[in-house]
Length: 361
Length: 253
Image (cartoon, rainbow over all chains, first blue to last red; front, side, top):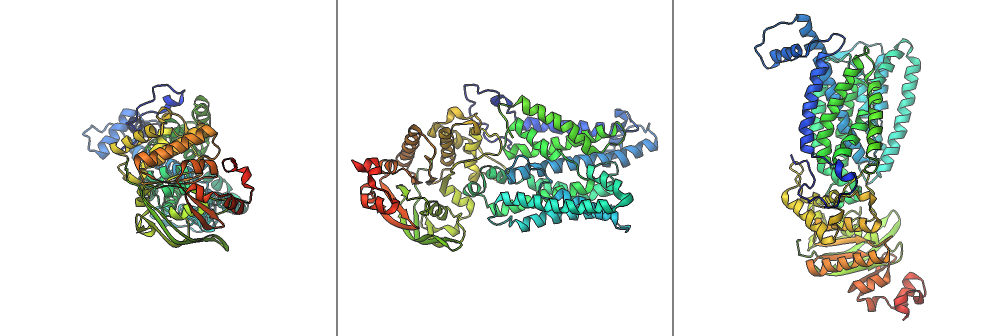
């Protein structure tokens, strides 16, 4: 994988402000990111309401997954915590973090709008409304370990984007501004539906509210087994479209002149980002900030070349959400969405201030 | 550089936006290696004509041939290797280095998964040197002056190595020095590298001075086609632009 747009180009002899200094080698950052992700996952498994020594955590994982011949010095309950509670939870956080960060890169690039995030085209309100409806309907339902909530949230997110796409004529020559505005309008309408559902929900209000804030507390292997393939395949396909995202940097018409079938690629990218977002919100609820901030932080460091931004956003997005979930557990199960905002916003502001000369949104 | 110009032929090209007829019955041959300027008042259909040639105008009538091959037979990607279009004013959503903007010109050659190869990088370096923006390589393209930015998008188009450069008002918003600089570069790319050049301009003096062949478009029709002295006659200027030719300095003398 070549992650640099033009490494062969000689650096200009005159140093040009700080902007010159902030481009780093993406390949090295990617390897570093994998390391950060591995450490985050290990920490995420070890710490929580019951802390398990890191060496024991690693021993359990090694024993179980790669048949490491270590003496069993831990209790069965410790093993259950690691394998049945922490591991699916941490992997869910990594999956969602990767998915939301990639969807954020795609939507910011597609809409050519730095303020876009994975939820901008109605996915958030669609998923929330779906979840709220699921909590209101007095039907017990389970399929492949998934509740009605997950399925309706997933469907709600996809239906919302489909509506936005159809209403804005998104695939044809319809301007990208109209897609954005339609997304806003449809989102508002669905939000009204959500407000209505919350108003009617009575005792379920708290549950809906928790869903809106996002959490990995209830993650199970069964849910992950359904969501992970969707996010993984969607993410892999998004990673393969780096060239298209680069072509879209200069706008739709310029992208066509650079050889892109804009109509097809736009539809494809929108579908992939929506699918990944829908699977993520179905798994964990509405976790904000990951999809907005991670892409920007990555671009700040390596520039806008999607060939570098996409893989880096994937690993650092995953690490970020695993760590955010860990932080959320420290005071005892805070909604992780609060942590991502509290940690993410100041970090983002600090970066913006530091690189003010070189990076504006 | 590819060095081989691309020829363009239009047969009975027409275009309507809704009920508004913007182009009608355009027949035109631009041979490989020619340098042609398209003139006409606002709304005459100049940009629409360019969009027909580059295949982004929907529902075009008539035939467009690129090197004798109908436009429809090209994929966007293969077309992008023949035609390099210099975008008008570019808006970049994110901070982007000049070398990264120029490298976008290599996308038509890039494998979707493998990414740019050594020859792509070489083409980017060469294009920046050719256009004279190599010393800007590390700058944020959004912080450049309009003149510098125009040269950067021109370098991107040069990196694309199409046989024809298509430009829509490349001197818009530029001061006199940058206007002349861009014109001289186009002449040089045409004469030295053999690229076909097709540019839309508003400045009649620049057009007459730098282009051996002018096309004059009025109300969607091609009304003149020839050398500057034949196309820009006082009567034509009065008829097409609706102004007294005395306001056109080089004609007044």
